[in-house]
Length: 70
Length: 181
Image 1 (cartoon, rainbow over the protein chains, first blue to last red):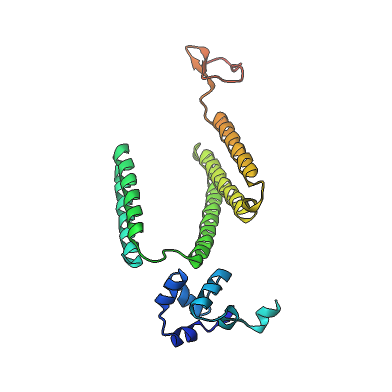
Image 2 (image 1 turned 180 degrees about the vertical axis):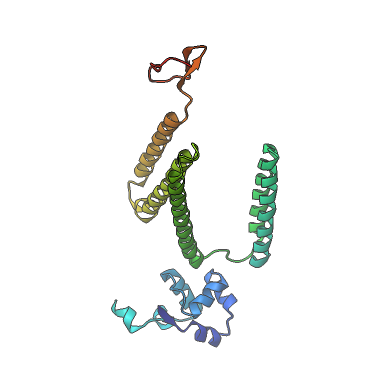
């Protein structure tokens, strides 16, 4: 599973889950699952989330060592 | 209208439609059945247009795919188990083998359609010859449907009337040799 810092970046920008969901054109539940690390996003969604948070994909999402070697 | 309100309203409408359709079928009132389905379809479309926000995203579609696969396999296994059970008890009721065969064919058809759809979505729709594949598949389905109708319709047969074999439809085989009863 991919780790991420969506919650931290979102809090820094003062965004709610709903606002981030609307910006990325997904449902709020998807943001909830993303923040909890229970859902692997598509490349498109990862790009949209990173763009909405003013960061790059590799800043927002990090593969743990085990996943990176696969 | 919020997504939650839309979901609640459409759910309530579906329950009402199910009750209405079941009642119309029970009373054998086809025009009412068709009218209910048509009006409900329009209402659901209007409700959907009034709902704000995203109703389904990539996570929903992924979940929907898994749910569809589970539902399809569950039904296929249930149909197979039912067909086996009916076939085991075929001596108790002459209708059981027919129902068992129907269940078996239904399950097989569902799995074949799933397999072909998967192959299409996964590979063929991206090829240059996709229209050729689609046309060939349509022709194949049409031929199989016509052949199945011809084989199982029972319309073209010989019937015994007043001690003589009389053609019913256009049977492509000769009249039976045994005498009429």
